[in-house]
Length: 245
Length: 226
View 1: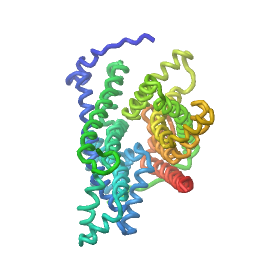
View 2: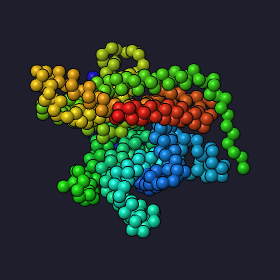
View 3: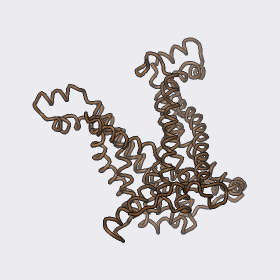
View 4: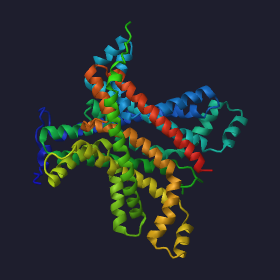
């Protein structure tokens, strides 16, 4: 197989005339990081609420939260993304749907992907939050109530501060997953990293250089996140638990 | 205010196509589970074994596959496999999309399965290995006859849960244009201008299958842990 390696391809001016192909890579990296971080924000907030609701002593609320988790866990991410992007604008009241369709295409893609990825990951975060709360001895909740705290206060001051510290390691792996899952946004045309890999193949006909560069960038993201989260884990680990020093 | 008017009539006519797509989905899933578990076991044993070179190689394989998005892995194999097929068999052999997808999923899933299997092997008490050796079994025999059966029993629920995730992930073959269940649903919806109905239908089918299987896994788990 005679393949002509040409790493200088990244320094060539890009087909759109703006910058080089290296610029495309960085643009892709920026979208991947922005999409992942904003979706992670949604996932943490919604996931915490759903996770707490799954543990409260109210059958309706916990049933609703369970329904959320089951729906978002049992439908493939790609199908969810297409439902947010293609189906929802049709089902919304026409004024909203049309407002969405009149937005800049990049904004449509970004918002659909962000909401989709955020709510999908929220179901996974919720499971971690729930198992964190359930792993605490029941005496903690009872002690809080005996001190005269209301149930919301017990969650706010007693259960959640402990639960969050315990679930940092599993949350790390969800955080890593969100960067990988963000690649699904390529299917609706968002110009994140994997999209740029495919575009580079189309425009430069140097597929191996493009794929290797993008793969290396994903590995760098992975290693960076892992490094930062390890430091966070060390800072917040609860003394006396297995794994703490 | 005009609400969207649903029209489900294009689904009955497309059922045979959708079933054909589901068979592709299942083919990819089952192949990836079969190859993934076998290759994953080899990787896990290599990683836990005494040979430093083998265990580093296995660790690198697993970590590399686990840090790259599945979409990229599928695209990679769609680049490599057709060229490899061409080099070995010449032009025009078989369905290169399917071959690429099968390879990608099998090798990718092996990395995830090997982590589950490694934890499963480590969950078997050390005394079991010592007992095997005391009976005069070789290392290979101890692994095959004593450690692995217990390990697989312990990790059955995790392996099945991973299989459900894999079943959902196979929809990503969309990026190379393979007509699995989801790809077929999308194409039919696009052709008939009924994307809304077909996508909701696809979501419902995935939900029913995955939800039922995960219920079964839960019941199985309850029985195993007794």
